[in-house]
Image (cartoon, rainbow, N blue to C red; front, side):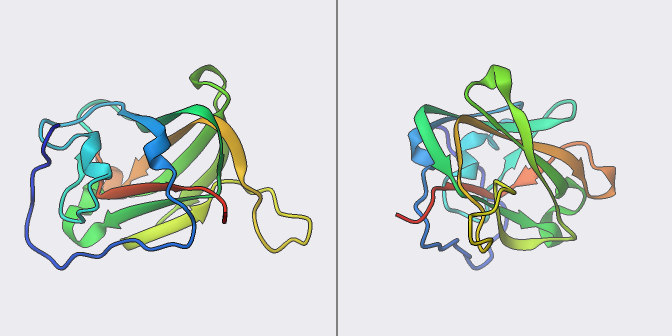
Length: 166
């Protein structure tokens, strides 16, 4: 198992949710990574490590599930104060039954984020209009559409994919 490079010492801030983390059900991959800053850094629950892309934009994080899953939310840890122009400001979320039929389902934007941020994957509201419906898919992809100050590579310190309330 690859190790993630630790950068700086700051108090840990861990994501907590009543929704189940379903990320362990998927095979994770990234479009590129700098040595020591690979896909494992997204899932190690350490806010001081991060995935760093290393290549042309756009950058992607892709999860392929072995069975159809219901995805409610994505949670992402971004630290503008530490990562500056490596910080994403716009993401596009794509989902589908395979990698060959991914459709964009959601765009999200951030302004100098320094925390865990979570958002519903689907924009489709439940019948009572209070919550978003879960999205059913075999594959989900997070595309980093832009970084702060047009930075080339990106840092993401944590990522969780959450299912609906059980």
